[in-house]
Image 1: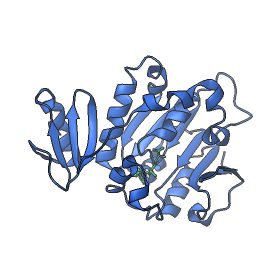
Image 2: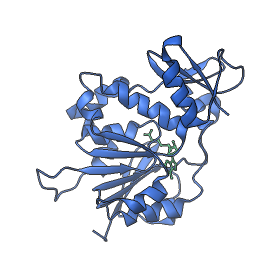
Image 3: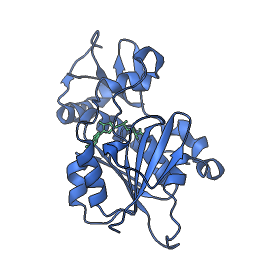
Image 4: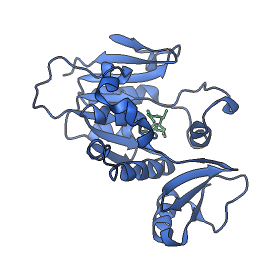
Length: 247
Ligand SMILES: C[S@@+](CC[C@H](N)C(=O)[O-])C[C@H]1O[C@@H](n2cnc3c(N)ncnc32)[C@H](O)[C@@H]1O
């Protein structure tokens, strides 16, 4: 159950959020419960004094050209044979709060971002909306298309062939909540570990994408036990890369 609290001025938007999420409107912060707060600043998720709102402006430094090319995900998505005038497309099948999609969009991909949790979708959509108003981010955010739905199903119905599919389903073993950022503490209340890894992987391949990229903890097992063509290794995470023979 999630509650929705708002400023007087944002009641209409709060009602839309409540319909989309099944959240219950309230006029004071509920104790011990998750709630969304809809204000002029944007939509935040809150619980017991913890508060988190998506903010792509905090990532701008990473998006500048010299830094972007060093990002592991950008290395993982690089392809040799792409024509200069080709409009690159990516599917982010597990969008979450959109940090990975933001990198892909900054690298020029049109990114179709699937998020099935209506609360996370609401927070993400609001984050992209605010980024569209930022001078540096607006062009990048214009390439980010947020979709509320199950990517495992929706990837089977695509009417185009993406260049890249990114899969980052939640991994079961995460650090204890006291040690992790408040973003993850709050979002983890909403997420559950992926129950259909194999189907998700198969749907990704069925899109015909040239490259499937799977984000994993550095020492985590392979997704669906499938051996990648190559890996980009970092200290805490790695990207498993699969070249799709269907293409
Ligand atoms: C680990 S998070 C992804 C984080 C993301 N890569 C980022 O950069 O913020 C996984 C997200 O995928 C969503 N998810 C998992 N399976 C999904 C599916 N089949 N369709 C759409 N969203 C899914 C979860 O609700 C969760 O928000």
